[in-house]
Image (cartoon, rainbow, N blue to C red):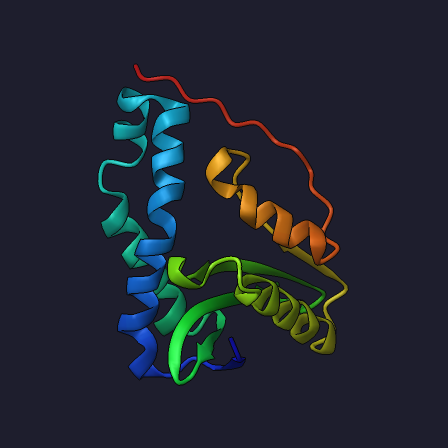
Length: 160
Protein backbone atom coordinates (compact mmCIF):
# COMPACT_ATOMS: atom_id res chain seq x y z
CA UNK A 1 0.00 0.00 0.00
CA UNK A 2 1.05 3.54 -0.67
CA UNK A 3 -0.87 5.66 1.83
CA UNK A 4 -1.27 9.38 1.30
CA UNK A 5 -3.01 11.66 3.80
CA UNK A 6 -4.84 14.74 2.56
CA UNK A 7 -7.51 17.14 3.85
CA UNK A 8 -11.10 15.91 3.78
CA UNK A 9 -13.19 17.20 0.85
CA UNK A 10 -16.98 17.15 0.48
CA UNK A 11 -16.73 14.35 -2.11
CA UNK A 12 -15.19 12.13 0.59
CA UNK A 13 -18.27 12.08 2.83
CA UNK A 14 -19.97 8.97 1.45
CA UNK A 15 -16.77 6.88 1.31
CA UNK A 16 -15.81 7.98 4.84
CA UNK A 17 -19.24 7.17 6.26
CA UNK A 18 -19.27 3.81 4.48
CA UNK A 19 -15.84 2.70 5.65
CA UNK A 20 -16.63 3.93 9.17
CA UNK A 21 -19.74 1.79 9.42
CA UNK A 22 -17.85 -1.23 8.11
CA UNK A 23 -14.94 -0.58 10.47
CA UNK A 24 -17.11 -0.16 13.56
CA UNK A 25 -19.42 -3.13 12.92
CA UNK A 26 -17.08 -5.56 14.74
CA UNK A 27 -16.61 -3.03 17.55
CA UNK A 28 -20.34 -2.80 18.15
CA UNK A 29 -20.58 -6.60 17.93
CA UNK A 30 -17.95 -6.70 20.68
CA UNK A 31 -19.97 -4.20 22.72
CA UNK A 32 -23.06 -6.37 22.30
CA UNK A 33 -21.18 -9.43 23.51
CA UNK A 34 -19.67 -7.65 26.52
CA UNK A 35 -22.83 -5.75 27.51
CA UNK A 36 -25.41 -8.41 26.70
CA UNK A 37 -28.35 -7.87 24.36
CA UNK A 38 -30.65 -6.05 26.79
CA UNK A 39 -28.16 -3.38 27.88
CA UNK A 40 -26.66 -3.08 24.39
CA UNK A 41 -30.11 -2.60 22.86
CA UNK A 42 -30.88 0.24 25.28
CA UNK A 43 -27.50 1.94 24.93
CA UNK A 44 -27.21 1.50 21.16
CA UNK A 45 -30.73 1.00 19.77
CA UNK A 46 -29.55 1.96 16.26
CA UNK A 47 -25.77 2.34 16.33
CA UNK A 48 -25.50 2.67 12.55
CA UNK A 49 -27.70 5.77 12.48
CA UNK A 50 -25.98 7.42 15.43
CA UNK A 51 -22.50 6.55 14.11
CA UNK A 52 -23.40 7.90 10.66
CA UNK A 53 -24.61 11.12 12.29
CA UNK A 54 -21.44 11.48 14.38
CA UNK A 55 -19.17 10.96 11.36
CA UNK A 56 -21.18 13.33 9.18
CA UNK A 57 -21.11 16.00 11.91
CA UNK A 58 -17.36 15.65 12.40
CA UNK A 59 -16.78 15.98 8.66
CA UNK A 60 -19.17 18.84 7.92
CA UNK A 61 -19.79 21.04 10.97
CA UNK A 62 -16.34 22.62 11.02
CA UNK A 63 -15.48 21.82 14.65
CA UNK A 64 -13.01 19.10 13.69
CA UNK A 65 -10.00 19.11 11.42
CA UNK A 66 -10.47 16.07 9.18
CA UNK A 67 -8.11 14.18 6.88
CA UNK A 68 -8.47 11.08 4.75
CA UNK A 69 -5.98 8.36 3.93
CA UNK A 70 -5.92 7.29 0.32
CA UNK A 71 -4.39 4.34 -1.44
CA UNK A 72 -4.35 4.62 -5.22
CA UNK A 73 -6.96 7.38 -5.12
CA UNK A 74 -9.36 5.34 -2.96
CA UNK A 75 -10.30 6.59 0.52
CA UNK A 76 -9.25 3.86 2.99
CA UNK A 77 -9.41 5.72 6.31
CA UNK A 78 -9.99 9.01 8.05
CA UNK A 79 -9.13 10.92 11.21
CA UNK A 80 -10.88 13.86 12.90
CA UNK A 81 -9.05 16.06 15.41
CA UNK A 82 -10.63 18.63 17.72
CA UNK A 83 -8.59 21.29 19.50
CA UNK A 84 -9.53 22.83 22.83
CA UNK A 85 -10.40 26.55 22.58
CA UNK A 86 -7.07 27.62 24.09
CA UNK A 87 -5.20 25.41 21.61
CA UNK A 88 -3.01 23.68 24.18
CA UNK A 89 -4.87 20.36 24.10
CA UNK A 90 -6.27 18.31 21.27
CA UNK A 91 -8.00 15.01 20.76
CA UNK A 92 -8.38 12.46 18.04
CA UNK A 93 -12.18 12.32 18.14
CA UNK A 94 -12.72 9.76 15.38
CA UNK A 95 -10.47 7.43 13.45
CA UNK A 96 -11.50 4.57 11.20
CA UNK A 97 -9.84 2.33 8.65
CA UNK A 98 -11.69 0.29 6.04
CA UNK A 99 -11.64 -3.35 7.21
CA UNK A 100 -10.08 -4.44 3.89
CA UNK A 101 -7.07 -2.24 4.70
CA UNK A 102 -6.69 -2.87 8.42
CA UNK A 103 -3.34 -4.25 9.50
CA UNK A 104 -1.56 -2.34 6.73
CA UNK A 105 -0.37 0.70 8.73
CA UNK A 106 -3.27 2.98 7.73
CA UNK A 107 -4.32 3.52 11.36
CA UNK A 108 -0.71 4.06 12.39
CA UNK A 109 -0.20 6.56 9.57
CA UNK A 110 -3.35 8.49 10.52
CA UNK A 111 -2.48 8.46 14.22
CA UNK A 112 1.05 9.70 13.58
CA UNK A 113 -0.21 12.32 11.13
CA UNK A 114 -2.79 13.66 13.60
CA UNK A 115 -0.27 13.67 16.45
CA UNK A 116 2.33 15.54 14.40
CA UNK A 117 -0.28 18.01 13.18
CA UNK A 118 -1.38 18.74 16.77
CA UNK A 119 2.21 19.23 17.90
CA UNK A 120 2.88 21.62 15.01
CA UNK A 121 -0.34 23.49 15.93
CA UNK A 122 1.06 24.15 19.42
CA UNK A 123 -0.82 21.43 21.27
CA UNK A 124 1.07 20.24 24.34
CA UNK A 125 -1.30 17.43 25.37
CA UNK A 126 -2.95 15.07 22.89
CA UNK A 127 -5.52 12.41 23.72
CA UNK A 128 -7.33 9.55 22.05
CA UNK A 129 -10.25 7.70 23.62
CA UNK A 130 -11.08 4.12 22.78
CA UNK A 131 -12.84 1.14 24.28
CA UNK A 132 -11.41 -1.51 26.56
CA UNK A 133 -13.44 -4.27 24.92
CA UNK A 134 -11.89 -6.92 22.65
CA UNK A 135 -13.17 -5.11 19.52
CA UNK A 136 -10.93 -2.13 20.28
CA UNK A 137 -7.74 -4.15 20.88
CA UNK A 138 -6.21 -3.20 17.49
CA UNK A 139 -6.87 0.49 18.17
CA UNK A 140 -5.25 0.26 21.60
CA UNK A 141 -2.16 -1.35 20.07
CA UNK A 142 -1.94 1.42 17.46
CA UNK A 143 -2.23 4.22 20.01
CA UNK A 144 0.24 2.64 22.41
CA UNK A 145 2.70 2.12 19.54
CA UNK A 146 2.35 5.86 18.80
CA UNK A 147 3.40 6.65 22.37
CA UNK A 148 0.03 7.35 23.97
CA UNK A 149 -0.43 6.27 27.60
CA UNK A 150 -3.62 4.44 28.55
CA UNK A 151 -5.66 5.43 31.59
CA UNK A 152 -7.92 2.48 32.37
CA UNK A 153 -11.47 3.59 33.07
CA UNK A 154 -14.52 1.52 33.76
CA UNK A 155 -18.07 2.46 32.86
CA UNK A 156 -20.87 0.30 34.22
CA UNK A 157 -24.29 -0.19 32.67
CA UNK A 158 -27.47 -1.75 34.02
CA UNK A 159 -30.79 -2.19 32.27
CA UNK A 160 -33.62 -0.92 34.46
